[in-house]
Length: 367
Image (tube, rainbow, N blue to C red; front, side, top):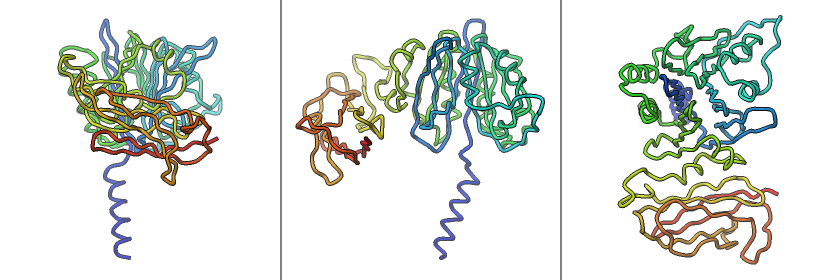
Protein backbone atom coordinates (compact mmCIF):
# COMPACT_ATOMS: atom_id res chain seq x y z
CA UNK A 1 0.00 0.00 0.00
CA UNK A 2 2.83 2.39 0.87
CA UNK A 3 4.45 1.75 -2.51
CA UNK A 4 1.18 2.48 -4.34
CA UNK A 5 0.78 5.77 -2.49
CA UNK A 6 4.40 6.67 -3.26
CA UNK A 7 3.94 5.97 -6.97
CA UNK A 8 0.77 8.08 -7.08
CA UNK A 9 2.53 10.96 -5.32
CA UNK A 10 5.44 10.77 -7.75
CA UNK A 11 3.05 10.86 -10.73
CA UNK A 12 1.16 13.80 -9.28
CA UNK A 13 4.39 15.67 -8.59
CA UNK A 14 5.55 15.05 -12.15
CA UNK A 15 2.30 16.33 -13.64
CA UNK A 16 2.27 19.41 -11.44
CA UNK A 17 5.95 20.30 -11.77
CA UNK A 18 6.24 19.70 -15.57
CA UNK A 19 2.87 19.95 -17.31
CA UNK A 20 2.89 18.82 -20.93
CA UNK A 21 1.73 22.26 -21.98
CA UNK A 22 4.54 23.99 -23.74
CA UNK A 23 5.24 24.99 -27.39
CA UNK A 24 7.16 28.01 -28.60
CA UNK A 25 6.25 30.04 -31.69
CA UNK A 26 8.42 32.74 -33.26
CA UNK A 27 7.72 35.18 -36.10
CA UNK A 28 10.57 37.36 -37.39
CA UNK A 29 10.67 39.46 -40.55
CA UNK A 30 12.44 42.30 -42.32
CA UNK A 31 12.09 43.94 -45.72
CA UNK A 32 13.10 40.79 -47.60
CA UNK A 33 12.43 37.82 -45.28
CA UNK A 34 9.71 36.39 -43.06
CA UNK A 35 10.15 33.26 -40.95
CA UNK A 36 7.71 31.45 -38.69
CA UNK A 37 9.19 28.84 -36.35
CA UNK A 38 7.58 26.48 -33.87
CA UNK A 39 8.47 23.81 -31.31
CA UNK A 40 5.68 21.27 -30.88
CA UNK A 41 5.87 20.12 -27.27
CA UNK A 42 3.64 17.26 -26.20
CA UNK A 43 3.76 13.71 -24.87
CA UNK A 44 2.82 11.89 -28.10
CA UNK A 45 5.87 10.99 -30.23
CA UNK A 46 3.83 9.83 -33.24
CA UNK A 47 3.69 12.89 -35.49
CA UNK A 48 2.76 13.43 -39.12
CA UNK A 49 2.99 15.80 -42.05
CA UNK A 50 0.24 15.82 -44.68
CA UNK A 51 -1.23 17.98 -47.43
CA UNK A 52 -4.68 19.08 -48.56
CA UNK A 53 -5.73 20.28 -51.97
CA UNK A 54 -9.10 20.96 -53.57
CA UNK A 55 -10.25 22.78 -56.67
CA UNK A 56 -10.91 26.44 -55.93
CA UNK A 57 -8.95 26.42 -52.65
CA UNK A 58 -5.38 27.20 -51.66
CA UNK A 59 -3.12 24.17 -51.22
CA UNK A 60 -2.06 23.54 -47.61
CA UNK A 61 0.60 21.59 -45.73
CA UNK A 62 -0.11 20.60 -42.13
CA UNK A 63 1.79 19.04 -39.23
CA UNK A 64 0.35 17.33 -36.19
CA UNK A 65 -0.68 13.98 -34.71
CA UNK A 66 -2.53 10.84 -35.72
CA UNK A 67 -5.98 12.43 -35.44
CA UNK A 68 -4.93 14.65 -38.37
CA UNK A 69 -6.32 17.75 -36.75
CA UNK A 70 -3.80 20.44 -37.78
CA UNK A 71 -1.49 21.66 -35.02
CA UNK A 72 0.29 23.97 -37.44
CA UNK A 73 0.56 24.62 -41.16
CA UNK A 74 1.03 26.95 -44.12
CA UNK A 75 -0.82 27.54 -47.37
CA UNK A 76 0.56 28.29 -50.83
CA UNK A 77 0.23 32.05 -50.24
CA UNK A 78 2.42 32.02 -47.14
CA UNK A 79 -0.32 32.32 -44.51
CA UNK A 80 0.59 30.08 -41.57
CA UNK A 81 -0.54 29.27 -38.06
CA UNK A 82 0.19 27.22 -34.97
CA UNK A 83 -1.88 26.36 -31.92
CA UNK A 84 -0.91 26.75 -28.24
CA UNK A 85 -2.63 25.12 -25.29
CA UNK A 86 -3.60 27.44 -22.43
CA UNK A 87 -5.31 27.18 -19.08
CA UNK A 88 -9.09 27.25 -19.35
CA UNK A 89 -10.46 30.79 -19.55
CA UNK A 90 -14.16 30.70 -20.51
CA UNK A 91 -15.26 32.98 -23.35
CA UNK A 92 -18.67 34.65 -23.07
CA UNK A 93 -20.88 33.74 -26.04
CA UNK A 94 -22.00 36.41 -28.51
CA UNK A 95 -25.48 35.28 -29.50
CA UNK A 96 -25.57 37.78 -32.37
CA UNK A 97 -22.79 35.88 -34.19
CA UNK A 98 -22.46 32.32 -35.50
CA UNK A 99 -20.24 30.05 -33.41
CA UNK A 100 -16.90 28.84 -34.72
CA UNK A 101 -17.35 25.20 -35.64
CA UNK A 102 -15.68 22.36 -37.48
CA UNK A 103 -12.15 22.67 -38.75
CA UNK A 104 -12.35 26.42 -39.08
CA UNK A 105 -8.56 26.82 -39.29
CA UNK A 106 -8.59 24.80 -42.49
CA UNK A 107 -11.44 26.98 -43.75
CA UNK A 108 -9.21 30.02 -43.26
CA UNK A 109 -6.05 28.54 -44.74
CA UNK A 110 -7.93 27.23 -47.74
CA UNK A 111 -9.40 30.68 -48.46
CA UNK A 112 -7.23 33.47 -47.00
CA UNK A 113 -3.76 34.85 -47.64
CA UNK A 114 -3.42 37.54 -44.94
CA UNK A 115 -3.86 37.83 -41.19
CA UNK A 116 -6.27 40.72 -41.84
CA UNK A 117 -8.66 38.28 -43.51
CA UNK A 118 -8.16 35.90 -40.57
CA UNK A 119 -9.03 38.67 -38.13
CA UNK A 120 -12.17 39.62 -40.06
CA UNK A 121 -13.31 35.99 -40.03
CA UNK A 122 -12.67 35.54 -36.31
CA UNK A 123 -14.41 38.82 -35.42
CA UNK A 124 -17.45 37.67 -37.39
CA UNK A 125 -17.83 34.60 -35.14
CA UNK A 126 -18.49 33.87 -31.49
CA UNK A 127 -15.40 32.13 -30.10
CA UNK A 128 -16.53 30.20 -27.03
CA UNK A 129 -14.67 27.12 -28.32
CA UNK A 130 -11.35 28.95 -27.83
CA UNK A 131 -11.45 28.72 -24.05
CA UNK A 132 -8.31 26.62 -23.61
CA UNK A 133 -6.07 27.41 -26.56
CA UNK A 134 -4.84 30.30 -28.67
CA UNK A 135 -3.77 30.54 -32.31
CA UNK A 136 -0.73 32.35 -33.67
CA UNK A 137 -1.05 33.50 -37.31
CA UNK A 138 1.46 35.16 -39.65
CA UNK A 139 1.55 35.98 -43.35
CA UNK A 140 4.16 36.62 -46.04
CA UNK A 141 4.19 40.38 -45.37
CA UNK A 142 5.46 39.70 -41.84
CA UNK A 143 2.19 40.67 -40.17
CA UNK A 144 1.01 38.47 -37.32
CA UNK A 145 -1.64 38.20 -34.65
CA UNK A 146 -2.40 36.00 -31.68
CA UNK A 147 -6.04 34.99 -31.38
CA UNK A 148 -6.96 34.53 -27.73
CA UNK A 149 -10.51 33.52 -26.83
CA UNK A 150 -12.20 36.91 -26.89
CA UNK A 151 -9.17 39.04 -27.87
CA UNK A 152 -7.02 39.54 -30.95
CA UNK A 153 -3.47 40.63 -30.13
CA UNK A 154 -1.97 42.47 -33.09
CA UNK A 155 1.78 42.74 -33.39
CA UNK A 156 3.49 46.08 -33.98
CA UNK A 157 7.08 45.28 -34.90
CA UNK A 158 9.34 42.91 -36.78
CA UNK A 159 9.01 39.92 -34.48
CA UNK A 160 6.72 38.23 -32.03
CA UNK A 161 6.82 35.25 -29.69
CA UNK A 162 3.97 33.07 -28.48
CA UNK A 163 4.11 30.44 -25.75
CA UNK A 164 1.31 29.32 -23.42
CA UNK A 165 0.21 32.37 -21.46
CA UNK A 166 -2.37 34.95 -22.49
CA UNK A 167 -0.79 38.21 -23.58
CA UNK A 168 -3.83 40.10 -22.34
CA UNK A 169 -3.70 38.25 -18.99
CA UNK A 170 -0.10 37.04 -18.47
CA UNK A 171 -0.87 35.49 -15.10
CA UNK A 172 -2.96 32.88 -16.94
CA UNK A 173 -0.75 30.15 -18.32
CA UNK A 174 2.42 30.26 -16.26
CA UNK A 175 4.00 33.69 -16.60
CA UNK A 176 6.92 34.25 -16.28
CA UNK A 177 7.78 31.80 -19.07
CA UNK A 178 11.49 31.03 -19.54
CA UNK A 179 10.90 29.97 -23.16
CA UNK A 180 9.26 33.27 -24.01
CA UNK A 181 11.96 35.24 -22.23
CA UNK A 182 14.76 33.30 -23.94
CA UNK A 183 13.29 33.81 -27.39
CA UNK A 184 12.70 37.53 -26.79
CA UNK A 185 16.26 38.06 -25.56
CA UNK A 186 17.67 36.33 -28.63
CA UNK A 187 15.47 38.35 -30.98
CA UNK A 188 16.39 41.60 -29.28
CA UNK A 189 20.09 40.83 -29.74
CA UNK A 190 19.76 39.46 -33.29
CA UNK A 191 22.33 40.87 -35.74
CA UNK A 192 21.14 39.12 -38.88
CA UNK A 193 17.87 37.39 -39.63
CA UNK A 194 18.07 34.01 -41.31
CA UNK A 195 16.65 30.53 -40.98
CA UNK A 196 19.63 29.35 -38.92
CA UNK A 197 18.99 32.00 -36.30
CA UNK A 198 15.36 30.91 -35.96
CA UNK A 199 16.66 27.34 -35.60
CA UNK A 200 18.98 28.49 -32.80
CA UNK A 201 16.06 30.12 -31.00
CA UNK A 202 14.01 26.93 -31.23
CA UNK A 203 17.00 24.92 -30.01
CA UNK A 204 17.42 27.24 -27.01
CA UNK A 205 13.71 26.93 -26.15
CA UNK A 206 13.08 23.24 -26.70
CA UNK A 207 12.22 20.83 -23.89
CA UNK A 208 12.69 17.08 -23.52
CA UNK A 209 9.26 16.37 -25.01
CA UNK A 210 9.67 18.56 -28.11
CA UNK A 211 8.37 16.19 -30.79
CA UNK A 212 9.16 18.24 -33.87
CA UNK A 213 10.20 21.74 -34.87
CA UNK A 214 9.36 23.52 -38.10
CA UNK A 215 10.41 26.74 -39.80
CA UNK A 216 8.19 28.15 -42.54
CA UNK A 217 9.80 30.64 -44.92
CA UNK A 218 6.70 32.68 -45.68
CA UNK A 219 8.13 34.45 -48.72
CA UNK A 220 10.11 31.67 -50.39
CA UNK A 221 7.34 29.18 -49.41
CA UNK A 222 9.62 26.51 -47.98
CA UNK A 223 9.55 24.25 -44.93
CA UNK A 224 12.50 23.28 -42.76
CA UNK A 225 11.74 20.40 -40.36
CA UNK A 226 13.56 18.98 -37.32
CA UNK A 227 12.63 15.96 -35.21
CA UNK A 228 12.56 15.42 -31.43
CA UNK A 229 14.94 18.16 -30.38
CA UNK A 230 17.75 17.26 -32.80
CA UNK A 231 18.72 20.47 -34.58
CA UNK A 232 21.82 19.01 -36.29
CA UNK A 233 19.73 17.19 -38.91
CA UNK A 234 16.89 18.70 -40.92
CA UNK A 235 15.02 18.34 -44.17
CA UNK A 236 14.20 21.34 -46.35
CA UNK A 237 11.45 21.24 -48.96
CA UNK A 238 9.79 23.79 -51.19
CA UNK A 239 6.02 24.06 -51.01
CA UNK A 240 5.75 22.60 -54.51
CA UNK A 241 7.93 19.63 -53.50
CA UNK A 242 5.74 18.96 -50.50
CA UNK A 243 2.55 18.98 -52.55
CA UNK A 244 4.08 16.69 -55.18
CA UNK A 245 5.83 14.21 -52.87
CA UNK A 246 3.60 13.97 -49.80
CA UNK A 247 0.37 12.70 -51.29
CA UNK A 248 -0.55 10.68 -48.18
CA UNK A 249 0.14 11.40 -44.48
CA UNK A 250 3.80 10.73 -43.68
CA UNK A 251 5.42 10.20 -40.31
CA UNK A 252 7.78 13.09 -39.57
CA UNK A 253 10.35 10.52 -38.43
CA UNK A 254 10.21 9.00 -41.92
CA UNK A 255 10.56 12.40 -43.56
CA UNK A 256 13.68 13.08 -41.49
CA UNK A 257 15.13 9.61 -42.11
CA UNK A 258 16.18 10.77 -45.57
CA UNK A 259 18.05 13.78 -44.21
CA UNK A 260 21.81 13.79 -43.67
CA UNK A 261 24.07 15.99 -41.61
CA UNK A 262 25.28 18.91 -43.69
CA UNK A 263 29.02 18.48 -43.69
CA UNK A 264 32.03 18.08 -45.96
CA UNK A 265 30.94 15.44 -48.48
CA UNK A 266 34.52 14.12 -48.75
CA UNK A 267 34.46 13.15 -45.05
CA UNK A 268 30.82 13.03 -44.10
CA UNK A 269 29.12 10.99 -41.42
CA UNK A 270 25.93 10.05 -43.18
CA UNK A 271 24.03 8.74 -40.19
CA UNK A 272 24.53 9.51 -36.53
CA UNK A 273 23.50 6.12 -35.18
CA UNK A 274 22.43 2.66 -36.20
CA UNK A 275 18.70 2.20 -35.90
CA UNK A 276 15.48 0.73 -37.26
CA UNK A 277 12.62 3.23 -37.45
CA UNK A 278 8.96 2.46 -36.96
CA UNK A 279 7.26 1.49 -40.20
CA UNK A 280 4.79 3.90 -41.82
CA UNK A 281 1.88 3.64 -42.08
CA UNK A 282 1.20 1.51 -39.03
CA UNK A 283 -1.35 -0.10 -38.93
CA UNK A 284 -1.22 -0.70 -42.69
CA UNK A 285 -3.03 -2.38 -45.57
CA UNK A 286 -1.69 -3.73 -47.79
CA UNK A 287 1.84 -2.25 -47.82
CA UNK A 288 4.11 -0.28 -45.52
CA UNK A 289 7.50 1.41 -45.69
CA UNK A 290 10.38 0.48 -43.38
CA UNK A 291 13.26 2.90 -42.85
CA UNK A 292 16.60 2.38 -41.13
CA UNK A 293 19.90 4.18 -40.63
CA UNK A 294 23.41 2.81 -41.05
CA UNK A 295 26.27 4.81 -39.47
CA UNK A 296 29.56 5.55 -41.16
CA UNK A 297 31.28 7.70 -43.73
CA UNK A 298 30.81 7.91 -47.49
CA UNK A 299 31.68 4.55 -49.02
CA UNK A 300 31.40 2.52 -45.81
CA UNK A 301 29.36 -0.70 -46.07
CA UNK A 302 27.66 -2.93 -43.53
CA UNK A 303 26.08 -6.39 -43.88
CA UNK A 304 22.35 -6.07 -43.25
CA UNK A 305 19.44 -8.49 -43.05
CA UNK A 306 15.82 -7.37 -42.76
CA UNK A 307 13.27 -10.13 -42.14
CA UNK A 308 9.56 -10.17 -41.30
CA UNK A 309 8.37 -12.73 -38.71
CA UNK A 310 4.91 -13.51 -37.40
CA UNK A 311 4.07 -13.12 -33.72
CA UNK A 312 5.09 -16.77 -33.14
CA UNK A 313 8.56 -16.09 -34.47
CA UNK A 314 8.10 -17.89 -37.79
CA UNK A 315 9.77 -16.35 -40.84
CA UNK A 316 7.33 -14.69 -43.23
CA UNK A 317 9.36 -12.63 -45.69
CA UNK A 318 13.01 -11.75 -46.26
CA UNK A 319 13.42 -8.21 -47.52
CA UNK A 320 17.19 -7.58 -47.41
CA UNK A 321 20.26 -9.79 -47.07
CA UNK A 322 23.24 -7.92 -48.47
CA UNK A 323 25.89 -5.30 -47.86
CA UNK A 324 24.59 -1.72 -47.87
CA UNK A 325 26.33 1.66 -47.85
CA UNK A 326 26.16 3.95 -44.83
CA UNK A 327 23.21 6.33 -44.81
CA UNK A 328 19.43 6.22 -44.63
CA UNK A 329 17.53 3.45 -46.39
CA UNK A 330 13.89 2.59 -47.05
CA UNK A 331 12.25 -0.62 -48.20
CA UNK A 332 8.60 -1.48 -48.79
CA UNK A 333 6.82 -4.64 -47.65
CA UNK A 334 3.75 -5.45 -49.70
CA UNK A 335 2.10 -7.72 -47.10
CA UNK A 336 3.14 -10.93 -48.89
CA UNK A 337 5.25 -13.87 -47.79
CA UNK A 338 8.32 -15.38 -49.48
CA UNK A 339 6.03 -17.31 -51.84
CA UNK A 340 4.25 -14.14 -52.96
CA UNK A 341 1.05 -14.98 -51.08
CA UNK A 342 -0.89 -12.30 -49.14
CA UNK A 343 -0.57 -12.82 -45.39
CA UNK A 344 -3.52 -12.48 -42.99
CA UNK A 345 -4.23 -9.61 -40.61
CA UNK A 346 -2.16 -9.67 -37.44
CA UNK A 347 0.91 -8.45 -35.61
CA UNK A 348 4.22 -8.96 -37.39
CA UNK A 349 7.80 -8.38 -36.28
CA UNK A 350 10.31 -6.59 -38.46
CA UNK A 351 13.83 -7.62 -37.40
CA UNK A 352 16.99 -5.97 -38.66
CA UNK A 353 20.49 -7.34 -38.07
CA UNK A 354 23.42 -5.10 -38.93
CA UNK A 355 26.88 -6.13 -37.82
CA UNK A 356 26.56 -7.26 -34.21
CA UNK A 357 23.37 -5.26 -33.58
CA UNK A 358 19.76 -6.41 -33.74
CA UNK A 359 16.56 -4.33 -33.78
CA UNK A 360 12.88 -5.30 -33.84
CA UNK A 361 9.70 -3.30 -34.45
CA UNK A 362 6.09 -4.47 -34.20
CA UNK A 363 3.82 -3.88 -37.19
CA UNK A 364 0.05 -4.31 -37.50
CA UNK A 365 -1.52 -5.49 -40.74
CA UNK A 366 -5.26 -4.75 -40.67
CA UNK A 367 -7.49 -5.85 -43.55
